[in-house]
Image (tube, rainbow, N blue to C red; front, side, top):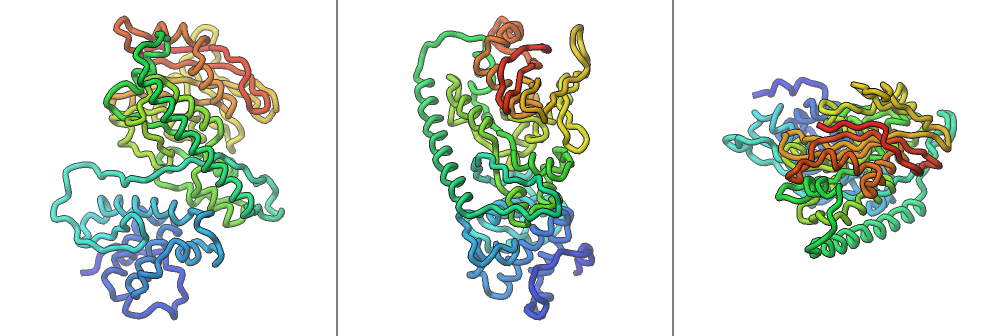
Length: 454
């Protein structure tokens, strides 16, 4: 029986028409793939649709053994024949998105399909499996996705449209990747060393910030540490268009237009996992916290986080909504929030209920080498109300750095933390508004100019 959605327009696999055997069009597996590609989970990403159609077509035509990461990169993502997959992980990045969207499609829109398409981990050859007779009465589980951290690199993407396109040279890519491996290894060693040393310490002086660390790390619940998505922030800046959380979860950044950027560099910005060096330092500092338990702390890149993760677990969210859209989940319970100006020309902290001596908004002259900047530290409930969120947000990189320094050297915020601590040692929810000086994107001098304790 013809599926109703088969009449919709679909993305087509990028083959010349004369190379497509007629039997493929009548193959139920191909027709299933076309229906999936026409579904709402794929209509906004022609690259994901073509990825799916390509691997299904190769499988049907008996060339499953030729479905490799390199071949997909060449055929689907227009990489040159000599490109090296060790230096360019675009296929792996899109494969994670593809697996997730297939699972979401068959859990919702395609739940009536008698057959499902899956792509087992470790390869790219699709398999066709019968749908379970009865769907389990639970929410769809997220596919496990390994996460890597990359230090932000910013090629000169500010030239006008008529200028020559930006190119990322192989030697530079190798240098960056070599540095990343060394830095990431150093981070893992530091995390393990500090965690073990601190966990063994049976006595330590009590600090006003101890209640905060205990709420986040001391208990059976997991804690997600989520650094900023610097590549996504660059996409917003280049397109002059902010992307809300719902669109970010759907992966709409994969289709954001980038004028004046060559396709290879544009694909890197859309698919690579970049974060800032400031975030890297914050993650390393968290690993030194006495209550830090590596068995319950999960480092998660924002593109791989899911709403379900924030319903029962704790989380440390680093960066404002422009670089970490997940920060917006706390806006409904917060007094202070960051909004971006039109065209991504700076950002402003909105004070929804100003108190005596407070302003209704705070903005920084972000385009000056030395300027006043502002930041937020917020300790709020998670989505399920059973856990905690710690948000470190700044109007710029220096602002986020100021929030972290105030947290890890808490003399400036100690009176607020003491006021927020209950007699039993637990901590009330709170928000802290900070002012700092940004000198060449580094924080200098931190003052508390506002707070709320709930």
